[in-house]
Amino acid sequence: MKSLNPKTKPLFVNRLLSIVGSYLVLRGTTQRLGVLSLVVLVSALIACSEQPPPPIETVRAIRTITLTEPASGRMRRFSGVVEAADSSSVSFEVPGNVREVNVDVGERISKGQVLAVLDEQTFQLNVKAAQADVGRAEVELRDALNDLERLQRIAAKDRGAISQRALDQAEARYGGARNNLSYNTSRLNLVKRDLERAVLRAPFDGVISKRYVDPFQQVALGQKLFDLHMEGAMEAAISVPESEIEYIYLGLPGEVRFPAIPEQVHKGIVTEVSKVAGGANAFPVKVTIEADNPRIRPGITAEVILLLGDEQGETAFLIPIEALAPGGSESKSYVFVFDQETSTVKKTMIESGSFRANNIVVNKGLKAGDIIAAAGVSFLRDGQKVRLSR
Figure 1: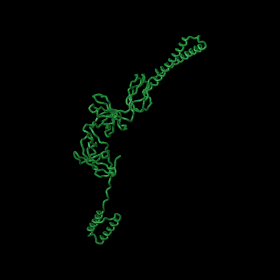
Figure 2: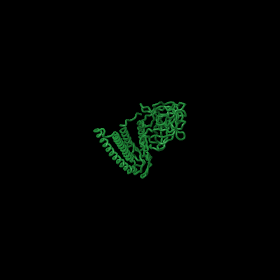
Figure 3: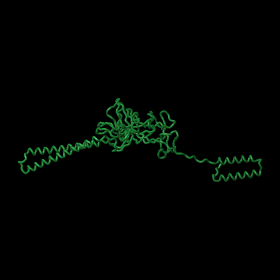
Figure 4: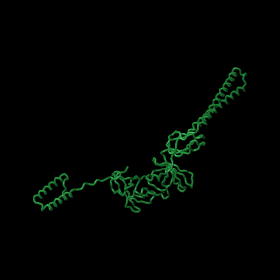
């Protein structure tokens, strides 16, 4: 039956009901039931003749991962602690009694900011004493110079009036006075520097991580007062057993996870490998965390995952288990590979291998550069149009 034009359908129905109404008036009520049945039937046929509108296709957003270089080797996990990549312990360069402490743990500081101050009275007295010594040395030098010049003038007029011994003694006295002034001037500079060092200033912008001093405390030369760390760059300090240290090298990439931030995984790279074993014959290793996250703080626990080379030479891709589509077998599974040209996903068969933590080894079916769906794959179908989530 040919479908009616939606624009002419109301006119047609109204005209049909008008004709039926007139017929009922003329024929009476005895045949109303049959005619009403006819009207219902005609209306149903009209409704059934309409074609439903096409469904609106929704474009699903998917989270993806991009395969880079194949991974090979044995995956190992190492527990460690986060440390600031740039840190320092500061102390006074002179001993004394602490007069004031201006910062506390967790406080952000800027370069040159005053952290603590010693009692300066002793240093000021030393400066005054050194200045007095310099003054006396200057007087002695002037007197020695005047005597030397006087004898030299007399000798110039009458060579026999002044003995050579007297001239030599005058020159020696002048030389000693000059050396004495130089010594006292240097001493004055040292005590002035000590007075300046009675004020402890921050060497760089950062955060106070630990404090070891209180006001009115007597501190020794070089005694540690504060631990500072620079914000931003963080690293995980781990210990690698002697049986596996030969596989660790500078630049080895890895992953860093944090129990305190379980939803995040960050890239890491080995930037320091000790050549000397520490406790339990384990070697200290530093892994720089490639992230600028304020939640990553010094002192929190870190788990570093490194892929170590092994003699079997296994080469494969590692993908998360969540990327596997349902319907696979023990050795063959499926993933959805995103096509950038068509913005669709293609269900692709892969040959899977062993499991490594929350990842699975893919031996065949994928190549470097492939973009695969990493979550919600149970809601996808082959050829479905999708978009990448931001």
